Length: 433
Image (cartoon, rainbow, N blue to C red; front, side, top):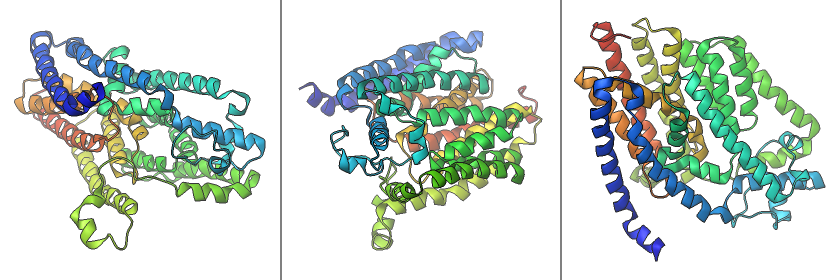
């Protein structure tokens, strides 16, 4: 009965909560922040607002604890099969009792990873408990490192709550799945320190190369240094190629017979999150007979790449006209480029928003600071950006059918416009840097 009521009235309740949240937040801003200008007074109301979403997420996780951890379950089963001498890429067909999902999922990582993981020595329950504990620790480290790296003047507790609430609870879904991407994106975030601060920059390329050997699509982050430096550093690109090339070589030398199965399993992919471009009339009229829906969706995402890249390049030249310190300059371009990378990924999954969620910390931080300025256009752009963040964070149940792609696209535009307006005001001497 309760579920039926939620399905019938849930969206209306969410909209009412959203409207009330917006009113409460901006009323709080007006009463607490406008006069004091202290950043800590600008987000206090959001503890209450985001608390609704977090409470909903807790009820959701406890209600689905019996059908969680499916991603790590795949790795566990593959590791146990590998230890027994069974092909880990076909273990889902051989040891069917190990899989907890209704639809069997395939192991898609390189075999070398299984030599590192210890699941064959642990029971299923203990292995899951340890893994989930490490995932929770990684969330703490993600927020801690992001706060320091992006110079965010907000309490860590608030950032953790915001991380869990953003994009319709998309990170709650990733936590429920216990996906390995928490560690992958933590590694990328740590590598950004070397890129932004321009100290031991080669470590960014080394870490990225290792990460790519786990998840191929992470190679798109090689665009970050190209955008920031406006050139290709072939020496460091060599470090990147050598790092993942060496890992592939070791896999080939140790497990040549398994690589064929690994490549075959890579073909078992779903279409990912919205938008579904294959549902358009363009696909139905001209491409449905020649291109599968999955690959058409891939192509449209890739088609966006040059347009977004050119947009960021133009903005970079505009940003260069004022003498920002190198760290702030690099942070702004890193934020925009990370958004672009997710927007152009051929297949976007829930876990791809892990890094973007901590990126949004700085977007929200800059928007709040802009509210303290006197320029009305800057205030409007700040309000627009804040509204997108609040809108994405209010829900009564974490959303599988997620529209986070559109929210990121809107944040990409609003944040770029916000910074462009700020730059113009700085150049005209209206505001200080």
